[in-house]
Image (cartoon, rainbow, N blue to C red; front, side, top):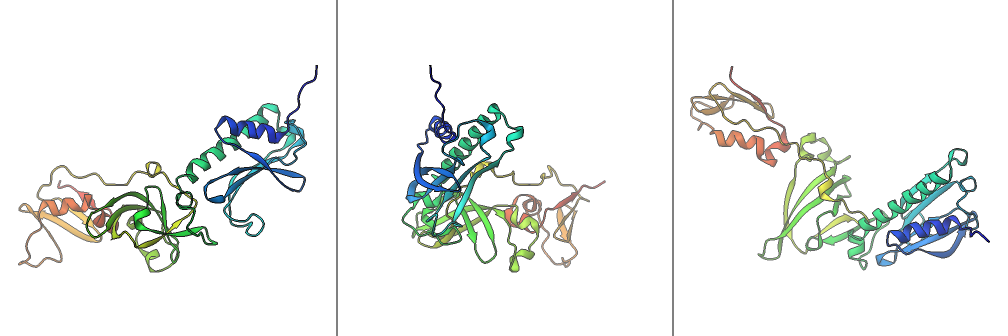
Length: 292
């Protein structure tokens, strides 16, 4: 009776197949490594190296697994790529069980990347060009939750949380949350709170914005918005400090040092907005000091 021996590539292909992913050998080879290929929308592909097509799953005879998503020509633009998975293993500390664990980890990473890729702007609009930095221009009307807008001048990245067509003149509204604050330019000097709260933007549906082509960020995975606790009741003698301004409640209304005797007192609702309004919170988190 003969026992069949499978190559590492066949083990990888089987693990991908269990996740509904079809992989084939693409005929390319380098450094004694054959490559499996997974085709994606828009003509891109993930290449997966098994290091040597002739080896089996014996852990002493393979040294690592790599999955690379080439966004263009792998030979003409080798740097235009995303590393999906890369794992180097020491054969001296690897056994057959951990080898299979490594294969499963690679297959899971590829499956997760494909799920993300299928929701990305590049997958939805394969006809639109992607530049050498991995970004593309997209009309606002094509934006979807999870798209990542980018300001190439400052490096700012923001996730689109929701979009809405307003129904008048093709105007659209979108809410975004910053995930990468600016690293250069004048806006880099804004307080950290400016980037922790949502931004609401309106523009014509035909207006073009720059987005990261190959990424999708699930809005549900964003960290909670750091809204402060809202005081339940205000009393005379309470103080609220916001953006270096000290407010004091006297005779049922709020005054600060910049108020003249003839200024109209500020009501409780206006002070409460300091704790709830995103525009106010971007300037700074208010500090509440109750009366003693």
